[in-house]
Length: 295
Image (cartoon, rainbow, N blue to C red; front, side, top):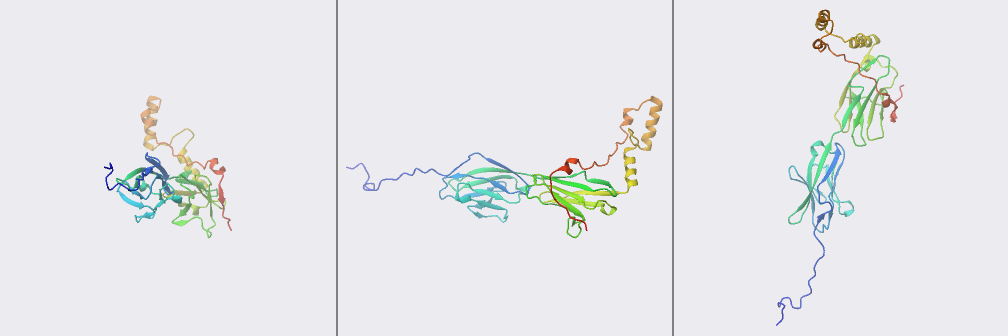
C-alpha cells in the first residue's frame, strides 16, 4: 500500500513561495517638523506590498484620509503620493496649519493590519518689526521701518498695508519694498521721498503668507515736538523725572538724612527712551530691492 493518500497520488509537486509579507522599511516611528504654511511630506516606506492597500489615518480622530491614491476627506490639502510606483507611500499635506500637528498612521491592509506612526509637529513663523511697534521720526527726515518674518517657507510674500489698503501700489509711488533671498524674508517699509511729513503718521500693518498681521504706529513730529518729548523723557543728564509728590518726599529725605533712601528711589519712575534707529546691519544687508520712482 502507498504511503500517500489517494488524493495526492499523481498530483503536481507543491510550490512553496519564498516571498515574505509586507514590512515597513523603517519599523520605528518617524517625526516630521515643518513651519505653518509649508507642505508636509510624511514618509512611509513599504517592501513586499504585493496586492495589499496602503491607507493614511489621522490618529486623533481615527479619520481615514487616503487609501491607495484615493482621498477620503473633503479637505483637499491631503494627498497620497506613490512616486514612480516604488516603495514609498507619502502623505502630502499642503499649507500646513498648527491644528494639523499630531500622529498619523500609515496602515497596510494585512490581517491583522500593520501600521507605522508618523508624528507631525508644526512650528509657527515669527514676525517682528524694527525699530519697534511705536516709531517716532522728525518731520523732514527719512522714515524706515523693517518687518522681519523668521521661519516662513519660501516663497514668502510680505506686504505693508495702511487703513486696509496696500502701501505698495503703482498709483501711490510712495514706498518701496525689498525682500531678501535667504531663509529669513525681510519686508522693508521705506518712505521713497526724502522728507517724511505729518501725512505719513498713522497705523501700518505688515502681513505675510504665514503670520498674523503685526501693527506699527508711526509718529511724524515737528522738530520742537520731538525735542520736547526727548526733554520730557530724559530730563537733565543723569537725573530721573519724578512726580511732584515723589520729588517732594525725596527732597525732604535728603534734607533729613543727607542721602536718598532706597525705598524712595523705587518710587521714582524710570525714563522711557525713544525707539532706537534701525541698526546699520539692516541697512547694509544684501537685499533684492524694488524701488518705485516718484514722479
